[in-house]
Image (tube, rainbow, N blue to C red; front, side, top):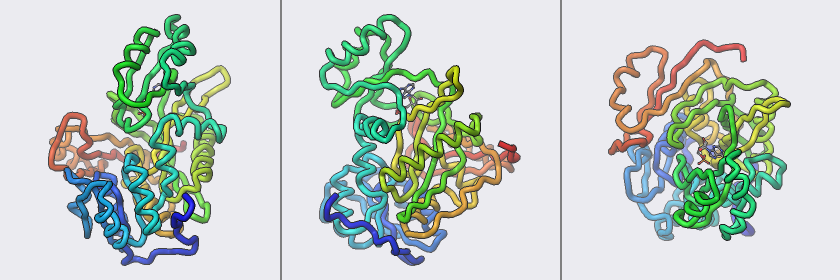
Length: 374
Ligand code: AMP
């Protein structure tokens, strides 16, 4: 990181400045919409493909992440850059950051892009995760996990260390034989995790500015189907002490990474004799699907919060005016747009993608409900 540029703490980008975004998906599109409301221009950079953010950005560059000429032109045209996709190659982020401030700093990508690095990061800052084994030798993994698996008391999950998302690159195993088979068949570096017997999955979306101020949105409770987020409900049905602990973990992670922008942390809630325990699953150094409800239910959405943080503005108010349930519209579910549009308490958001594929995130709908006391 030596020699790389960090935006001076006193920098406050005025409206009219240009924000560069690496990645052209729906998150880039929603960031662009939020930036536009504050008077910023956006320049999106993404490889060729179906990039829904291109349709609404003032400037768009379709080029590969290793095209240094295009990247240099992009960096030269923006006042600050950010990313909406955690698998932007680290080298791309560092290249851009040498030329213009890139926030969050590339270190957040470096940690989150490799599951073993991420687990070690959590361990080193005293945050509990599922138990895990990272070793390239399957015999070592089998030595530590095989007996317990064969006893049938617990199961494991093998995950690819890189490029896993929406449950891709994961295989569940219940015996040493299955472990060895999956290990042989899966590509690249692998990590073994013990399956967590969670009662709920929650996420915290938090933001931090360069002067260290932190604000978190209320905690969402998430359901997944086939590894893909299906719905997020707020408030999460957890004890207030658990919610406080989840926020503390988020604040710790944000501070340890010297993070600027919005970050999401996914956690498992486990019921134990001594109450609810939290185990962190992973973090995403970006705005997150489980925070889409903030657009419909908060004065400041996660998208605006991210733009504010990277532009050096004070964070906005993350308070929620309604209880919510956000549901993803996957694949051709988006064809039902007219029934969602007809519901007065629903806020519909469609991403404008060219092609609908099974399981592809095409939009979401946020159902607003009366605010409860939680
Ligand atoms: P990930 O790609 O790590 O976010 O995993 C996708 C989903 O798989 C999570 O949201 C969980 O529902 C499930 N999952 C991942 N890791 C574990 C684990 N160690 N134990 C139980 N479920 C898991």
